Image (cartoon, rainbow, N blue to C red; front, side, top):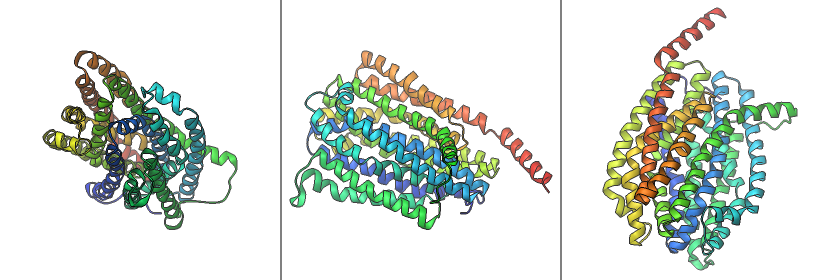
Length: 459
């Protein structure tokens, strides 16, 4: 295991990390878009049912992501320190912790499907459809969580290509299975939403096998000796110190989206379906920013662990500039193509109108959303989860939800979409200022000087 991110040109290293991740994130987003496309062929009601599942699926996905962030943070810093045994212990313990979490939430989820989705605004017409999807999805949750944590550990080593390949394999398996299981092509039974869930579980299962094989056989990042319980608990404590706030922070977004979905449900299933399509297209348009934020964490973690503080400062400056450029570019493209993009997923004129309206209003704030992603990844990589929590809670709970409620009263659906735009811009500005105070040039130069002095003192 080598510290492969602490030397070389910063921009080149970030590019090397991000380009494979772009394809990997593309595969994940394509995975979801493909589901939406084929379910959309079933009609507005099944599409609305799937839209109701988004907040719950995203919440539990955020839990897995949080565990992955915690694992990546401690593993990357251990790699930067050059402690291979510590890397193996932390990687193995992050996976066992994930197994316990999966068991708990699978049982809890299966027991609360009807009351939870009723509370989210689902009516009696769509609830059976939701149930047919979520019962299967919960049983396959292990195939979502373990690969996400495993891929985070692989990325912490500085290898973003393999996780991207793993995610791409899953996307291709899903592409092959969706039309067969959802629409009943090739003589298979037409399973509709249940078929979408089965396709998801099978495709995710392939990522589980490949990720574990690579961690063990190629990177030698797993260990199979059973240590004292105290050692395992200490590893879990380190992972959860960053992972729990990161999971909680990530969960705030889908939970808030659940509230927003409830507000939109007051305007009918047409509004919910339009929002669901727009959300998937939005995720697709943010692929590059998501890839960059996934790459900046391992870079910051390894360099901070190796006391290469100036490289961290340089990486953040480049990343924030790119967020601004990408945000402007995507805003122009989506504004010009919004109705056409919406029509690819549904033929209902009202659904198309709502989707297109969202894609004209909200992308104005994508640069701010990108800054939030980069700043959050940086703080988590440094082992400082509190700023990420504050940023997300402020963005979603303090600003988005109250403004969405007010906007819906004054301007209807458009007011809800404008609230998202305002919250992204405001918190994006705050995130930039906070991050710069932590990693400003004076601070990193002082840390560099302190590190050099400490090194000379040991000679």
